[in-house]
Image (cartoon, rainbow, N blue to C red; front, side, top):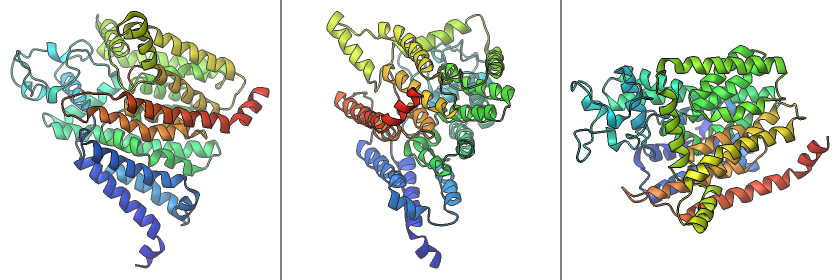
Length: 463
């Protein structure tokens, strides 16, 4: 009782978080708009307490508060280990790819809709939902059955290991996939603490990432491998700082072969790493990426994998910002959706913008500047992208831990509004008003961040 009285604020806050995540993880689906919005909103308000000085002081007034809170953040992720993803159905494709590899199917050269088995040994698992007019069925109405996999080799390795261990048990497959993400998340939290110490920043900033509801729900709960990529990028940076350049290159290659987004960051290492080390770093990355793709090599790999990437840029639309304005202009000018044109030029504009970021910041040698540049590169990329899923904002949040930007925190809260698109089962109806509200709040805080830092920015450029 004495312990409970002395630590009552900490215990109450922890208890509310546990109940909140248990409820959201086990009982709420994306079509339940009010439970989802109220549940996530409540968790975000509890998280926001970390940024209120008086409340934060009460949480950290005890000698072992930091260790307790770090274990709590890990425990909240562990609480979700036995759930089924409830906000995304991407895991059906993960499971199909993994089982396909186990059964000798190359996911970069075979579409689920094209695969024909000679026997029924695995058909019951790989195909279990009837598709009208065909003899084929697909797991849970998989939404990607008509195109090749877009998940790079290391992601495929995780899928295959999970499928090998789980066999034809879908729930067990989900569990093993989640275990991988859970372990990498623990690694990310420990790496963040280590990097914050190296950069002489408060280690308490780790909780910006550790307790963020979007991070916990989208990564551990909904099986998104952005968390694995983030771990590898941080690990590569840590190894670079420790002068272990070869290992850093190998680890960064794992980041790229989990998700392709880290390719965007590669030019940003210019002028932050000495030239000789940079050559080794880039060289190891290039060779390693090629080696990781080798098991999937075939005459059609570049064509099929490239086709899937092009499909991503030129077909899908969801929760976009500036892209929607460009699309509207296209409608005014030509009378139809110009996504194929916008999608063609978007990568070029993003690359040019990254090069401009490098040009304007080449005199700033501090390694912490790398994280600021990554944040801005991501904001440019996602502003122009035609599809911005909620879990994409986690990249921005993770790298912003080393900055004093607040807009990534706000975005991680309001981007959940995009799930209102799925409020009616079987329908995808995006609300333009919701998109306007989301990005208006984000860009207002972004402008405020720039205004708040204007003196620092000017001093940096004058120097």
